[in-house]
Length: 204
Image (cartoon, rainbow, N blue to C red; front, side, top):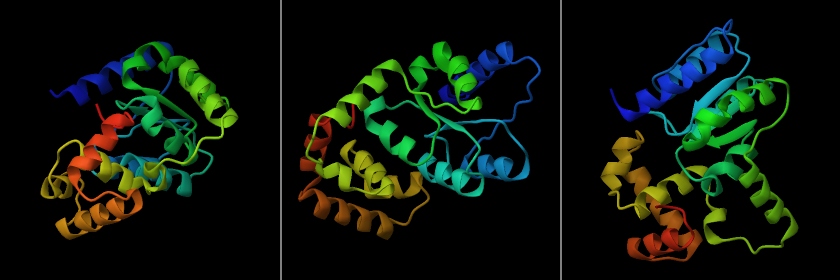
């Protein structure tokens, strides 16, 4: 049993203890998640942004396109300031890290089912700061969601072939993304990209 499965089952138990009369469904990958959303009627979707298959951001956009009123709470292992704004702009009703999920999950689900939006107090503070301070747009903020994802993988040391295999893309497509990333960010080498990502806390 991998860590992903352990976390998923643990969070399901947390919800089941609170919502004793609720029905639950699980999906092992992105396509299975979409199929269940399209086929059945749900009150809320708890979406892992790093699930196997397609990008979690792509899955989120498809859910919101087919069922715009269905609330989606996104779980991520990434720090809030890396993905939260992109996720919320893509239509999610809430965002939380897996580290805080066991303590905050029940309250977050209750809030978004009632039509609200959920972000942690620390994220709310960061977002308020972004709104009140006129910050110059950083180079990585000009990337598309897929380019941002590929950029982080390159910066983490993944090869083009590894990225292609992990994301069901062709090597040629990943190379095209890499070229666009370098052009948009005015960089020339992977080492420069890694240094940038570390300085801006985009990778650990």
